[in-house]
Length: 141
Image 1 (cartoon, rainbow, N blue to C red):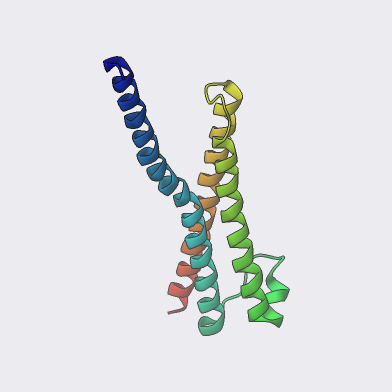
Image 2 (cartoon, rainbow, N blue to C red; image 1 turned 90 degrees about the vertical axis):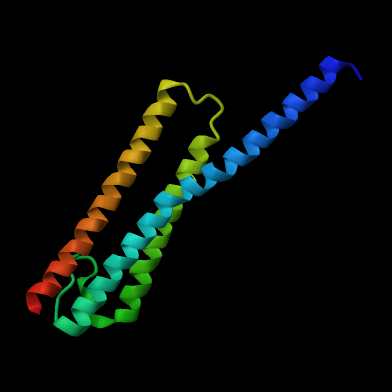
């Protein structure tokens, strides 16, 4: 083996190590949006259940009002499954977007911006719902 081939092999090994090391961090960071949406959705469900069961609050969502009045387990199943599905869809959309070969195109940047904006809006709406639920419970106390 020549000196140059040894140096090239060492450089390839270093680059491969850096890719693997960086890839693990990216994976952990990509999970955070889905996880935070799941946690906020769960908090919304929990504060809604507490408000309904202990303080006589009512569900503000017109699609779920009849479900809450007839069956809390059905409400729980619908609310938590919807939360899980939405968090999973955000995770898969981001994962699929990152598989794009050319990440320098305008369409990739636009799609990434739209995905992040939608995530921020969804998280803000869930945060608003949780804060609203907490305010309703605080007013009853």
